[in-house]
Length: 78
Image (cartoon, rainbow, N blue to C red; front, side, top):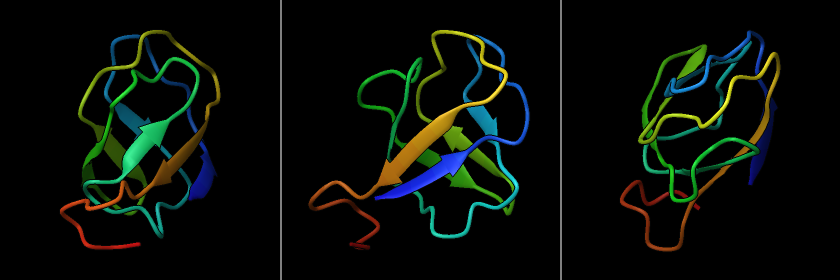
């Protein structure tokens, strides 16, 4: 699993998180953190953003999130 801290505030009901770098994050990974809905996965990744499959349930000035591969994820990454 990978642990990242956001580099910008995130609004409630947003599904995009901003980071300094998203190296090591892949489509299909699970996303975990306070205010992130259970079962959220990574839909898209750029060099600095992650788009989640579900919107956050609250706003946060900074988030520490964990991203990791579910067993059998379509990405095939472990």
